Image 1 (spheres, one colour):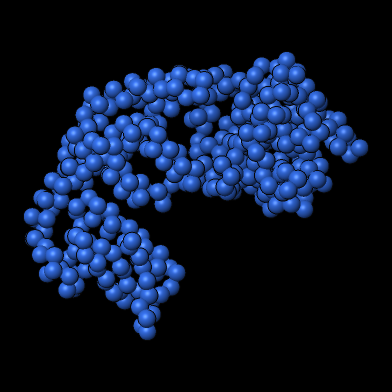
Image 2 (cartoon, one colour):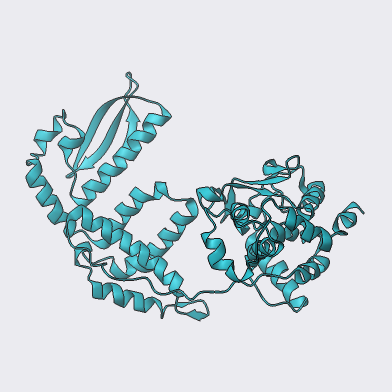
Amino acid sequence: MASVRSRKGSNKLFMDFRYRGQRCRELTALEDTPANVKKLEALLKRIEAEITLGSFDYAKYFPGSANIAKFHQPDLGTLSSESSKRGKSTLFKDFCEVWFGEMESSWRRSYRSTVRGILDRQLIPEFGDLEVSQISKADLLQFRASLAKVKHGDKVGFSPDHINRHMKIMRMILTEASDRFDFTCQYRNIKPLKVPKTDVDPFTLEEIQLFLKHIRPDFKDYFTVRFFTGMRTAEIDGLKWRYVDFERRQILIRETWVKGFVEYTKTDGSQREIEMSQPVYDALKHQYLATGEQEYVFSTLSGAPLSNNNVTKRVWYPMLAHLDLRKRRPYQTRHTAATLWLASGESPEWIARQMGHANTEMLFRVYSRYVPNLTRRDGSAFERLLTSNFNNEGAEHAE
């Protein structure tokens, strides 16, 4: 197995790998430091990928090495031609591993998991033993059609959006392979399936009041913050007390909690400061009495972030059923905040910043029927709306 090690006595790093059945060791001028080891490991990973694909050029990486003559390297023109031919005959499953290895460092942990799952469960079983250059447009269309009939759980067929995700990864792989090995990519003129537009289904103020009145006391603060901040599930579940600024009355969105790990926010634009309305401020002050000594604002007794799956199944849906409210995903709390801001007359630009949108385009596209004649731009209109409807909330917490 290839490795990066330190040479005894000199503290210089060298790479140890196998090429054409022979062991190769190449000394570098780099000192044995964690940063240099990481740098050489990335280089070695690329070398192994090129060896797998038959495109490795020893002289390119180690121009002064004595091993060049040993392997009788042809001239670069011949090498390029032979590499291209070998690359075209590379099996899809082999190229998938190379592609994934090269790309994974640029993805969030959760997306790496998603891509790995799609490769292992669908793409490699379907195309793995085919040569990457021989996958036809008919193969791709047939595969797409089959996804609409896949059985998963008690359902049959993936949704158009889910199918498009599979096909997007397939397109990325074939495009990279065709560029690298100079063949015509068959993923041409294959348009994504049309995804049906789903209307948002926000809660009314009356429904919110009813929900918060009857929800378990230990979850009242949690859902108050969800309804009136527009935070995504991963954002509120990963919220830490160090990102709650009571003095400036702001919630700083800096991290998320996804599948058991702390992650970066969904996009750079998702990094933002949410202004606290009075109900949110009161809820967080009250929550501080319960979890202020812990790292996460909303946590289990052990201090770990809440499990979104457990909260949804054991708290959210049972409460909707108990109150005879329409069954809606918890994500509708985000839509609720947006529509309440719009209804109160806040500026679209201010709302977009609160939501973490790069601009107002999505705001008008998704919430167009909720947009009145907007005049305010600082959160005060929303504050008045909540104050008039929730004027007793602060008193209840004080008790």
